[in-house]
Amino acid sequence: MRIIAGIYKSRILKTLKGQNTRPMTDRMKESVFNIIGPYFDGGTVLDLFGGSGALSFEALSRGASKAYICDLSKDAIKIIKENVTLLGVDSQVFVLNMDYKAALKKLQDQKFDLIFLDPPYRLNIVNEIIDYLLKNEMINQDAYIICHFVKGNVDKNQINALSLIKNYAYGSSEVLIYKMD
Image 1 (cartoon, rainbow, N blue to C red):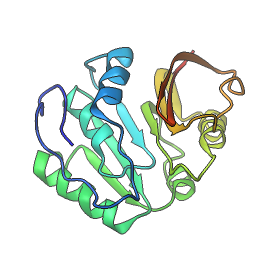
Image 2: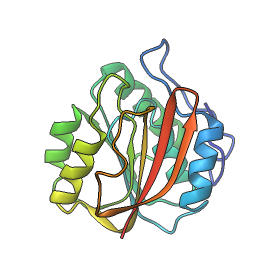
Image 3: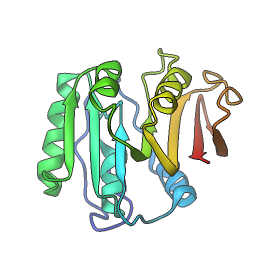
Image 4: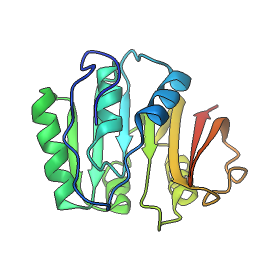
């Protein structure tokens, strides 16, 4: 797994061993970042299902100011922390070892500019999380929400407060990009 662009371009990230995570491919990641903007001028990232933290590190490489990366797995947290040290972004990354519900409650007073929702495929919770974020006003104006899930697992039309910018299908997975109006 590598960072595609920005100040950490071509840096190799550590990843989790095994089949418990399925990171977004470089091709998918590149497509997403081409849509939401190849580079950022600051902004706060929320990554609720961090895995290795690759999406957040890509955003930081491209100019995001800080990232909150959450994962329930202790193995994932270990890898995320190793990647934080590897890139030297200790002051920009806040790592939360807890489930997504606890993280959302803990971060309820925060507002985010870029949100990554890439839950395990067995969980059908993307709409629920977006509803929570909207209800608690955790999404900044012009923010993007990137959702990665098993095809057909999300009702794209259920979310009225967001504009659907792009919908990609890759094999058995799907990526939605929403923008806050």
